[in-house]
Length: 450
Image 1 (cartoon, one colour):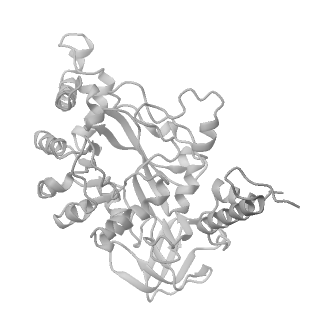
Image 2 (cartoon, one colour; image 1 turned 180 degrees about the vertical axis):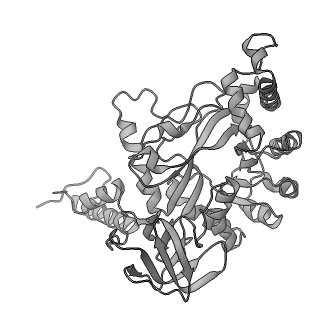
Image 3 (cartoon, helix red, strand yellow; image 1 turned 90 degrees about the vertical axis):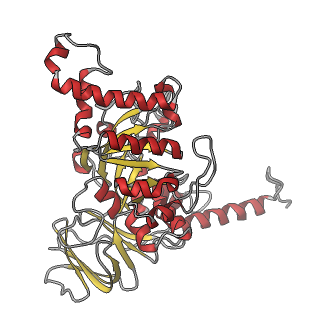
């Protein structure tokens, strides 16, 4: 019997073998530990024998980690396991704090610069696949807008990110100027109240080329307009009654939007500001000098290395994508060793860049930074404790007594491509290592599927 020829020129048998090989490769890459989750009836959980990177302290070999009531009870090499605890032998594995992603879109869509990705989606197909995309509000001055109420705890990209070791994430709104407020979420739960860590996690501002339109077609205009908003917010605070009685000049935005800027002006709300090229970053440094109470965190910063010493002196952390090295009109001098140069200058480095594979690849992004010269320990800190400290998240990002029990058990070095997260604990509960991707893998492992 003659074999049929596939569209790509291969015979049916060859095409079938190629399909099976591709399926097997996908299954191997997605394969996770089949170990059953620990029993919730136990008084606590003890993980024994692993190499533990506490981040806030020294690495501990052959350590025991005790979890109870959602918190870390103890970490150390000589810790005894109390009676009634479920014991997990993880000898030979690596334990780190759960990864903290400071620039995510999980649960609220993946809006682009043009607006919502599912604009015009009449049948909800995109929503079903990617979660909602309620992350962008029309208009360019939206400091009162919070992305929190658009977060869908059932979004299918949440378990995918969690399987990459992400346990906490800042979900950021899209836009082209003053985008709104990002929300910190914990990646396990079925209700918004279950997952919200901090509703108002940061004010998201864009002062890169994307904001030129909001500035009348000029970067300088965008910066001028933002400073005008901040000054008018202070005017509104002092002369609120006169504003409401229409007894003062028109202000730069409605009263509710100006009021929403006050927590940032008083240092209670971090300002996460995008600036890529060196000239724009210099503008952010001048902004800090004019409004010293602003808790600025630089986002992206492709050319931040140019002003590394000045950024360190100003105490501004930098959240960047360690994979950015392609010149653009918004930054002609990106470098793969950007993170390493900033770290050497004393800048607090956060790795939070985007990746075509989504948030789950945060650890690989950190691995790129290590390859380009960032010390291994600093890279781990850049995706755990540094974002927690910069944004004021208490008891997260480190494994120490009293910390929230978010941790990951890795098969090996988390920055190695061949390693995988085998167990993930969120607030002390071991979460399932399954997602829509693994369900599809299992369904189509045998072709044709049953």
